[in-house]
Amino acid sequence: MEPLHPELRRALKEAHPGLTDETIDRVEELRARRFEIDPSAHPEEIARLDRERMQLINQHMPHYASVAQAFAATIAAAHRPPPPVVTIKRKDAKP
Image (tube, rainbow, N blue to C red; front, side, top):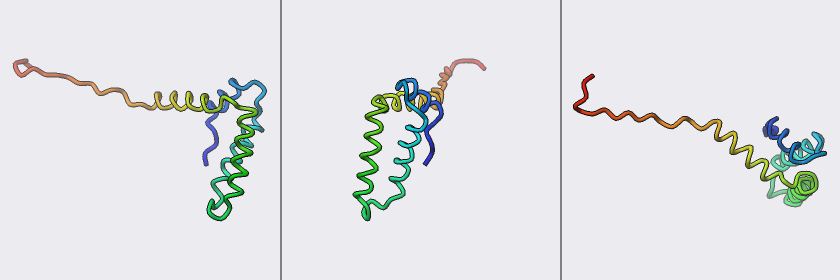
């Protein structure tokens, strides 16, 4: 799993005064651990990790979803290719 982009981390801290890197790291650790567990073999462990992660987000980052969406939109816009240039040539135009 990739860690949070540094700019997303910064945006989360701006939107949530008092938010620490340690809390963000713990949320990310819980998310990563979730994907290391076989859900059919350990559904209760996945549920526990999800509950703990959501509790941290609700307590320390209540605006997490909106900040992450705004960040994703910014990144998508930055990587969007420029619109194509269309040139219409007239048949009777001379080169």
